[in-house]
Image (cartoon, rainbow, N blue to C red; front, side, top):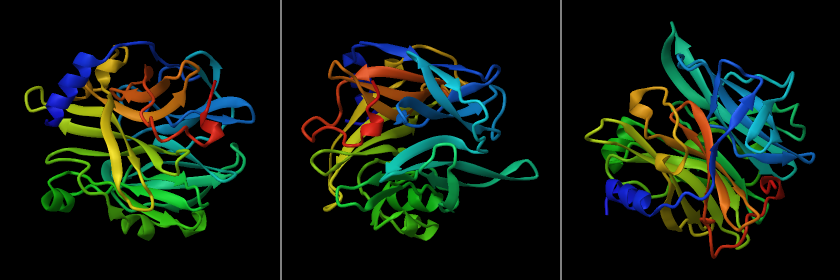
Length: 320
């Protein structure tokens, strides 16, 4: 079954249980989307969001928001402004690691982009400590059961397309501590073969240590619709054994169809759901979070995608 057929089958079988578009206070005139995983800090729920005007590109900021009501998030006054896109967070030991895409321009034209990473024990005092390789987004970290750190990469280039048939790959490596993280380490991470077929691309968006010691991965998988000429982004998940590097349970968990309707930044993005995080619910389901059409952040209730591998270990991801 190809990806188009998988998408159609998923949407035919999907039942909407509970879904919403998040509202963001304190940023009138701006869209907020492609947010980080929601997380707990000192008893309150937070997330980082990409803040951008609807008619602008390559002019984004990452801002911190605190949950103030159900599906309502409010800008934290006087919080740091990061000149980056598409934030994400990882809890590594007693530290928060936040990363985002830094876009470098030359005479107002795209020159390159790369990931900048910040770390710290205090949410209002994160400090920059390293960057990823040029032209690489979606670098993700996860604390492992043995105290080491798993690192996911996402190289994407014409060379990757020519060699593997896919526009991007996902790499994985393990480091002893955050002190060992560097652009060279990320670039040299060995690839996980077979995640994407010809003319598909994707990446890891959030990674969780599970009770059985394996890694639950939320990601996105994408392709260009040959008829509509749209860039189709879908939510997927799989489970990775960090010791053997074998993965299983790879499947779609969401598409744009699984979230409430809303506008897209451009017509080619009307079918875009960019995975951002997941929060367990009291009813046994989970809320899947996703950026939508490069304009909105949504959530939708789905079945727990890592069934059979235990719960998520990190308490800071378990928001009630």
